[in-house]
Length: 410
Image (cartoon, rainbow, N blue to C red; front, side):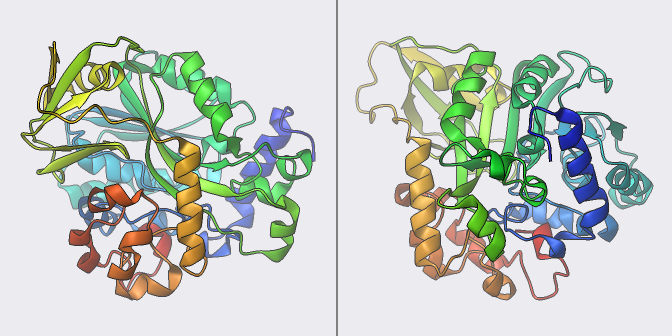
């Protein structure tokens, strides 16, 4: 196969893999496209109402759909069968809109032909559409500059032969204060050409995985504020032949948040307070693994975080003040290096018999986050109470024995 620089070869390989090779998520050879912690209960409830044809062809490595987006305009890169778009359409309501972009005809057909049925379930016709196009060429697909409040993507950007072009296109499509909220696959090292050009590894989201440091620098260079990590999970490669090809490289599903706000570097002190108002996050809001805001509690933050909370689409939910001194408050949280989070996720999965996330397959029938996993999940120990395995979610059992397709909830 040609190198990643040959876009047509990559497009052809990916189209064939997702359009013809994979019949459903059961055909996957790694956990990359089904990894990730359980979605929020609100999202799980919506997923149950989505037509089965859409759910059955869902491939994703996380849950990149924020709550509190009523009335927003959402763009989904590589929307596939449309599952995340359907969820987003329910969350934005009749006043918001959702547009999915994909290049695979078979997936687009599934996404489009189920809109009417979903509208009947919602009780209104959603502003939901799917357009044919490449995520590197959003303008050519009809996506105008400054037209989206939030862009989501689920395990797709790694499939692109030109990730810088994708990020630049998203930056242009977002309005000021907008956000790219997405899950994808990353590697802990640069990958050899034998991995980057392997058809199955490309299709499984492994071959195109970016080195995390390379990605984060690329995002900042384009103009996004400092990348923020919301969750990390280690990805298991179940096929012995593929494991041999990747050698010692480790792969991770990471949920990143990239905000289109000024990149502040000032040394001023700021205090932020979560006012509440986001359904599903009534008592606290997790901005990233280092910043969890309890409602009504004043928290010292750095200039970058203050810019996000006062200028991004989240601004209406927070009160941010510049102060001379934040007496009586803990110092602003420091940023945990992504490499540290990846190591924690790997150690957690190793100690849990190879589980790649909070939802080990053998535990699907009894809930995604059993008590014994709380202290060794994919989030730093200090964040267990607000991370991927909150105690209050243990009994909700998003992966019940009745679930025909585990990937739709985990």
